[in-house]
Amino acid sequence: MSNILDAPHVVVRAREKYCLALKETNKALRHPIQVKADSTLTAVLLLGLFEIQACIQQGIRVPSALTEVNSNFERDRVVGPYNSIQPVSLAFIGFRIVDLCADIKSHMLTDSQAICNLALDIRANLKAWADLRSETFFEISTAREVANIYFKDKKHVYSSVWGAQLWNSWRSLGILINQIILDSLDHLLLHNQEIERDVYSEALYSLRNLSQDICISTPNLASSPRAPTMIWPLYIVLQEARNVETVRSWAATQLQGIKTYMGIKQAAVLAADTWRESLTPHFNIFA
Image (cartoon, rainbow, N blue to C red; front, side, top):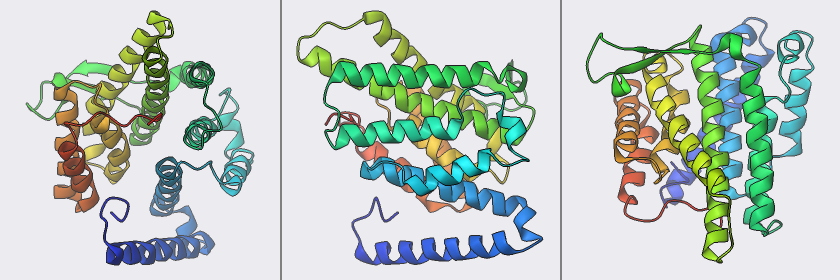
């Protein structure tokens, strides 16, 4: 809220709430019983997501401490065996995207073609991650139960709610990296430079397809305690002007629903704020 509203008292309260959340989370991590609770895991994940979003918004690189914590977590004797099947962890792919955005914003990287090449390499990492998770993939089926609950009457079938959340994190990163690819190619076109049209078309198709998949997955999380994790993916879908109106409208409606049923007002604020700016060009990282 403090990042959206220009109100000093909101900033003060936001900092107080954030410090309280950190304090309570640290207390839970030191408790022999609470440390194993789902609520503690959710708190850690949401705080980590908040830090990543803050880096993106402020155009700064991922703090080295956060990278180190992630490395230690993946080397853990419990977690390690499950991560051994993937070429690059999803967290580190996310860090690469955040760092790339920071380097562009700080003008450390100015060559649009070089930026595009780096983004394509990161997108290849995302594809490799997904290819090695075929055993935990999802199916798409036609939903006939209740009208207007499922996007385009389709639904995903996941092995678990956690799987739905994981795949939406992957989709969100995919949208972000395709945005960078498209923005860099648009920048080249603006300066009358030739681009590979196939690369542009593929990035646009991928961005829209990932956005639709996030919309389709919404019912899998909407009725679960993990519903708040949908805020970031839905916001990414909503703010992307390259998405068609039906997709953006669905995302806005779902954000409003999270506010109504979960009491998270920020979801509705994000939806309203984005629609107010819908007549302006979408966020361009080169701006």
